[in-house]
Length: 134
Image 1 (cartoon, rainbow, N blue to C red):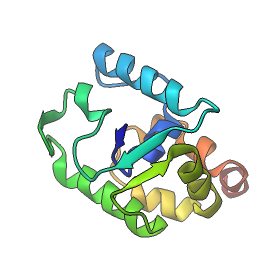
Image 2: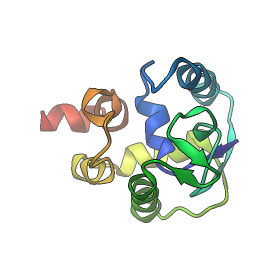
Image 3: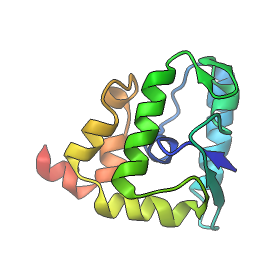
Image 4: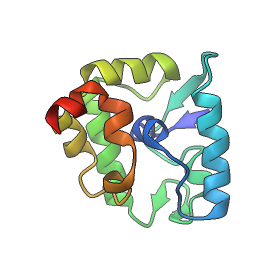
């Protein structure tokens, strides 16, 4: 499965909302698989991935209507967590992210995301760290 670096965060905070019914159906399918106990291999890519495939903002391969923003999200995730465009085990990656993520890092990465204020990202990714901040 191909996954953008910032989608490592989106798949954790996702709570059933989306851009369109087709997008939500695809997101439900992918997040269900990723949240399973079975290890899932993902290939990080700073380009169009399996979630982008059904997004109405996708204009073409590696082209989103908010391209500068999504590229910035990807770059920040790659930098903060020292990731590369290669294959990983999803569950191991999200555990690493949860351990190292701070409220400030999450706010910085997700600055400008329209879903961040209404998502479960802070709760799901930061857990007790977020509750301590709030």
